[in-house]
Image 1 (tube, rainbow, N blue to C red):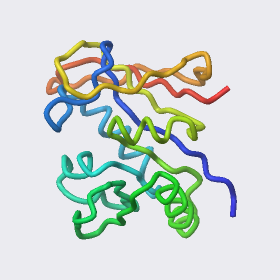
Image 2: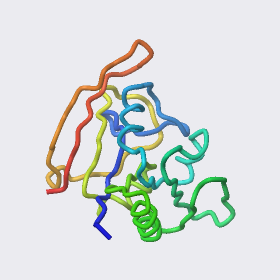
Image 3: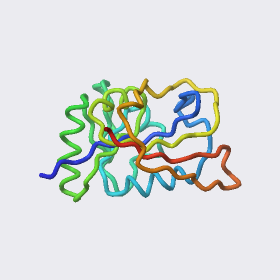
Length: 170
């Protein structure tokens, strides 16, 4: 089995905010389109609250939900209770699909657990400082190098501007 890259996909405001009351405190359609394009066909690891903020399992991807809630159930997903189990399952499911990357998509506790194992971060810089109740965990940028940076196109429906940075572990 080839070694699959572990990647985080996150949108972070200038003040570290990644969420507010179970949702994202901004609208940025280009970020959602980029998310879909970069995650399609790959296993996704997310926490229960992140999963519950969605309209259901994300199509074309294996949805792995990490939770400590022994009673949580939902259709069309795999449930695990440790990051080690999530990564093992993601490698198996990803290999079956021919994926080369595992995508960790939040929330904060899941990012914190995955960060030491991550090879890459797709970091959407949100050029705003909205109110929020969920922050991205502390990160030492000295451990990472920018491999690309691109401004995301803004539509009239968007409430912010953003830049997609791709960071690889040094």
